[in-house]
Amino acid sequence: MPEGVRRRVVGLAADALGGLPPGELPQSLRQYAKFTPARRAKYAATALAAALESEPAFRVRIAERLRLGQPDLVRALESGSVPAAADPMDVAAAAYLVRSAGWSRLVAEAGEEAERAGAEGAAAEAAQLVEKLQAELAELRAAARADLDRHRAESEDVRKEGDSLRRKVRSLESDTRRAQAETRRVSAELEALKAQAAAERSAAESEARRLRHRISELETTVEQGRRSAREGRSVEDMRLRLLLDTVLQSAQGLQRELALPVSQIRPADLVEAVVPGSASPHDVARRALAEDDPALLDQLLAIPQVHLVVDGYNVTKTGYPTLPLEQQRIRLLGGLAMLAQRTQAEVTCVFDGQDLDVPVIMAPPRGVRVRFSRTGETADELIRRLVRAEPQGRPVVVVSTDREVAEGVRKAGARPVASVLLLNRLARP
Figure 1 (cartoon, rainbow, N blue to C red):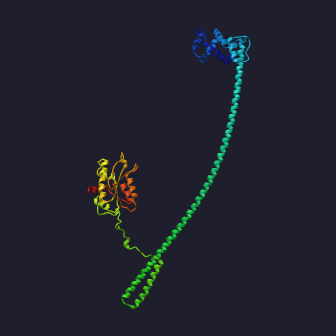
Figure 2 (cartoon, rainbow, N blue to C red):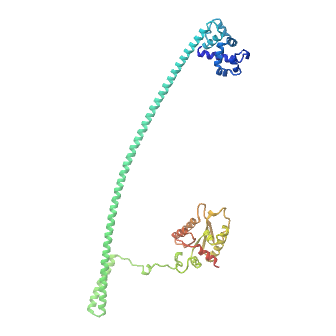
Figure 3 (cartoon, helix red, strand yellow):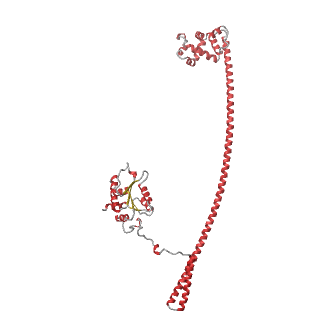
């Protein structure tokens, strides 16, 4: 039996199996009676084909079910005619079950027709596949040609860009060579000017030495003339007068030649010292007082317009570190307020804001400016900014034991003093 006819017969038997009583079923098929037709056709195909071939009664029962379902086809087969519009597979399957006259021929012809139809379908499918592959090949070739053209265009653009870059590089190299040549020329001119200036300076120094020697000779001659005049020799007086006139005229000529300006500076003006009224904190008490003597701070605060900047926690943790931070601030600010009232100095106290857990709510004492550093900034940095904010020349005194703070404010022009100096001064009544 051809495979196509076999599948069609098994399908008809699987559909009809569910309508038969269990007692009429072969023993090998009873376990599949409760399956759906699709599952029976899948799992019981071999058993159904064997039962139809070996059990004529079962095949007759299936043929009767087919007669009820397709009576026209069964009658036509029994009468010996084949419907023209019927599917050859259906005709062969029905002939196999009904076993009408010439059923074996119908089954064979249906198998041949199925094979021919399958071959034609396969050929048509192969032709369609070939056409599809040819179309895809044409598309791929077109895409490949387009990619090739695009790559060629991109390569041409890259080549042009490379040529442009090479031209720019050559231009830059030429500019660099010209700049280097110009640099060498300017350097040579500068060396020549330096040599010329050195020669002119040497000539001027030689001329100055010659003039100084000439003046020395003239001064010697004048001195000799003066001695002769004191001796009362009239002839010598006349000669000395003539020589003196000559010297004066020579000196006047030298003055005109050298174009020396009238000097307004005296030797005493060139001696380095502190001018009254302009003393800075660095000039106060260099030798007379110790660095921890409270009198030193009094002298510093006596300078006009002095600004006292205090590193708050540096002072409090030096003097009374066991107190809470709030009590440290209150104690220090109270002492600074009294100091500001007595000295009339500008006082700024700086605290490190990084040690605060919550914002500080406080009323700064009279005469004392209180500042906290911002987040991410230390009190040392805020002190340096305060010192740099002051105008050049204003006296600024910074109280801190921190060496970095002291070095930084000293470079900025302020006078650093130790925290113990302020603590000693505040402890004094």
